[in-house]
Length: 393
Image (cartoon, rainbow, N blue to C red):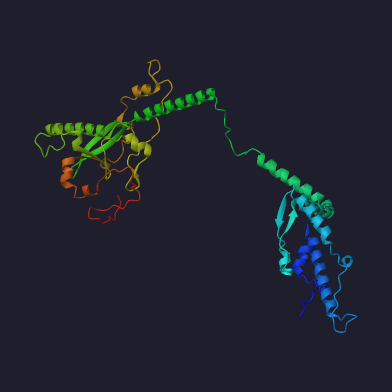
């Protein structure tokens, strides 16, 4: 049995992917690719339809016709290959971008994949599209020229308003030159000296403090003359001398004067209201800070202003203004001093030994040491047992 020779003509049944691969070589634009794909699909449908029809010479056979390239627009493979090689050589000389056409996935999943698109050509195409749309935009812009000009004016006015100086600023900064720095230093020094003079004048002002000696009962002590700048211990020292002169406590001791001579400043306490004032503080501290004690009352209600001094006071004696004021007010009348009419029982001079023995008994039980950080206005007065007092004073 002899072998049959191979058929002279064989059917060229290519798949859609193979045909697209052959016919789309060298294409750059997506529109060309879509056009070629439509032609390939149309040719394949036409070939399938002609293959289903019977041929003129055979009754039951099928006829396969070769598609006309002029009708289908299918390019010649040889010429296409040469053109593709030229296109590839051109592409190697310029930058290329890999673009994936997402629209093709919905239409045909068997597409040839991404196509290389030149960035320069894409930019030229976008520029041409913008030029085509430009006339329409110009027509719209001609109608809104007035609005654009008004918006521009408003923007210019806003910018000008932002750049204007702030009129609420009253002080204009000066250039910090050496002369300006020296002038400011001189002004600060002058203000400092002026403040020190005023402070010295206030501290040198005398006040009167009526007081009593307290040992369970109020013993009149009289009035002590002190200055606003004196310490608390200086008042206690003067009150000790007053007690020796008056013979306070003579009913309890045979020689009261000798007993007072043995008493030192540290053995005495200065009680203002219900506050025990430390020895090392000045009256000036309480006067300038306007310290408020229990009952919303100032501990030392004296003026913090310097006394008025006439300009010709002490003229020709070679003294400065504070010294002139001090020389002329060395011994003013006691009745003219500030505080002379205060309640004597508000200020008590107490023997510390008596306080240690009776500090659990009222009123010594409610006395407390002065604390500059404490707010006595909002304080609720309590006894040593923690019970609140229901009375004022």
